[in-house]
Length: 303
Image 1 (cartoon, rainbow, N blue to C red):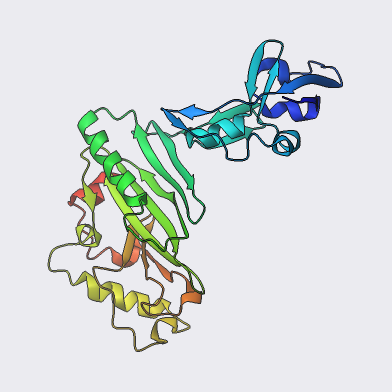
Image 2 (cartoon, rainbow, N blue to C red; image 1 turned 135 degrees about the vertical axis):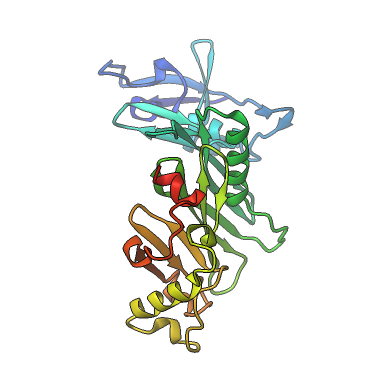
């Protein structure tokens, strides 16, 4: 083992109070420590970096130290071994390892952001998805969480996978309804990857999920109404680039917001890749004659 001088400004990356500068506590200009040549075994699997024993590796970016009879390991290095994300919350002077909880109002008491950050020599997965806590019905909560996790997963067994990222947004939380919008991007080589988008509208009380048809009265010809409204809003005629816009279908993207709905289309469906996901906002006022105000979807956020 070799002796290294580790200056205090480097010490903030190590897991020990003596090596952290906290609340104005002053330390010496340097700490003389010994770089520790340890093995790192996680759940019985040796995950020691292949070049860890190389002296230049330890001197340039030490990940473990022996000091005053104790072993200290870099938080970032340790979190990488465990497959957990690590962030520093400067405003609260907190080091966050793993999932992060965001408080929310209404029946959605809190949402834990679950993360998967995995990388091999040839490919990478970087996924974030919500995990709901605090619902009164545990079975409903488990059902919803299984659905949300499924939306973010990469399910293709593709040996050519280079990169897959997935995250989400909350587009609406009102009453018992939450609208999640999942965005993903997969790259398997070539000029560019392929993005995808999936809206999930879920009732937090019942676990019921909704589709486009659930907002409208039966036999209301809502697809024709939506198609006419989208055509009117498509003032630059981008939906006619490949061929005349045939109209909205049940397979097109759709979700509810606080004051209306959004209809969106996928790359190459009607437009070139560079247009992304063309979306059109339609107010509830424009749809008032065909909305099923007694239906489960409408009543979930208009009790």
